[in-house]
Length: 94
Image (cartoon, rainbow, N blue to C red):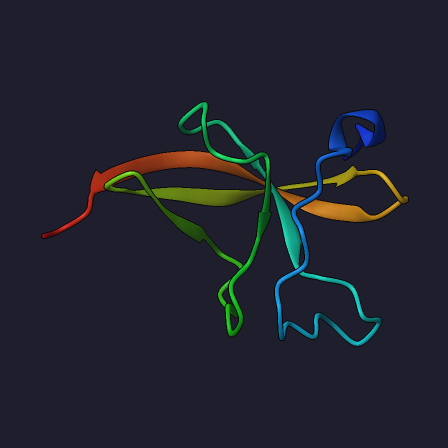
């Protein structure tokens, strides 16, 4: 399923310094759905992230886990991004 939310994606994250992106020069962004309301909707995967079966985001003392929905969403510029749904979160160990 593909959803077109290009009007809502105007706040793309700024580019990371030193991140080369994929072979076409694009950054590895995904859409996060659910989770803490303060989490960014667009999330840049860290360098070296290879496991696409989940995304873990450390945010305000918690690790938020997201799983792929199998959906793609079109954002500003026509890019299709994978959508990840919040699964659960755990407290960060001290």
